Image (cartoon, rainbow, N blue to C red):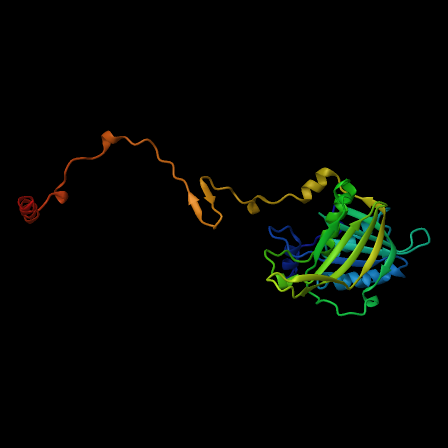
Length: 301
């Protein structure tokens, strides 16, 4: 149930804001809300700043501290995310029981869909690497290493959540020179998540395909999974449901070859030859000149 009381708009701008918050056939780019708990310092504070740089411009930040416990009472968190019109959130806090605590999650229908609590074991910020960085709006290439990502439901949802966290706009095509940034996630045997960020360098190789080198630019983090709250299969299936208007209807008897040509097959009914008109009409009769010419040709042969 929505925590915000929806009022009838009194102005045209207010009506546009409410219409923008409704469900749409093609959703806009998802914003991420960054907020801090009662105490937030150390590595988790640095990570929140770097996450803001990686998510720009699709990010909103709340500067004040918030007395929120996401796993005990998520209502306040859902209220803030809905109020700021965001679909993702990152909550950073630190305490004696859970130092350098990071909670990543996403919202569907104003309710928390998935939420994972990570502990930062080791962290190197962007400022630690004294090298040239990439541009602000560069879209990263995400790589997930290790077979463990597909072994349990928790890790599968975490992989999907990390994809939503670091993915920006959806693109239809890419070019080789446009791939400049790669973020790697590795799941080790002891369930430690290794996050590494690299800049892709294209070097000369003497061939048409360039030689690729990776240069670490940060941030670099080691996470441990503490707690998780994943949605049920029914709720998760509902969030992935696509409207019927976007589904491509399959056209019968149409195929495409490797060159992109379209081929169609036409089915004709049974032809009744008895009904074919064979009566000669006046328009098809030969004129006297044509008859004379045909006689002359026969004589010549």
